[in-house]
Image 1 (tube, rainbow, N blue to C red):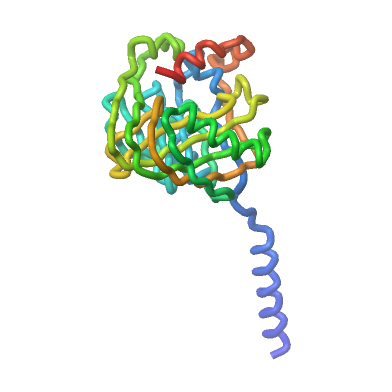
Image 2 (tube, helix red, strand yellow; image 1 turned 135 degrees about the vertical axis):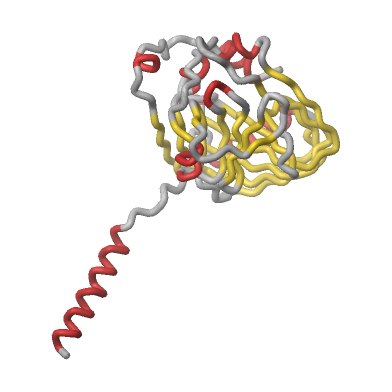
Length: 263
């Protein structure tokens, strides 16, 4: 009986130690695939995939290998808005050259009122950022009814790849939707992230029925509900191949970045 008790206690201790040593999920961490600078220069090969992105987050934005459409992740599901604005649901093996994600947990709630442009949307969100720390990261989910939306997606590129600004001169398509319900997914990066990502806000949009979406260019709405996740850590994965290692990542591409951010 004493031997049985010893074994039972030992087993319980092992279980306790095992449970205590299990690493928790990386919460409050912005997970990034590659750099915006490499994407701008035409590095469109897959660095990660949908499965890895979902393991590192439940909300996210990005693009797909060959810049084959815009990536929107909501509630752990990754959506692919292709060249005609329609939505596909890619499998976990689908490759990604650039993306961001986090395990979404709302820290801040806000009501966004009388949004007459994308700039007004940014201004109201920036007020939240200023109150909570401009040098942190923020993912936002904005749900509601939109008076108008304008968004874009792009055609898949083929090798040899052109720089992104050059490809977007001819290979993107624009869409206007009025009186539609949907969700905006946005990411805020601080100024010091220049060359790694876009400083400030970047938004993607998807309709409530998950049938259309893309990179958001303009928006109008009377009242929207925003849930914001303040994020304090950063993790990035990078490719090791020669194309990435030889890329001129130090050059100033700010004008090209602005060109692909707007219509």
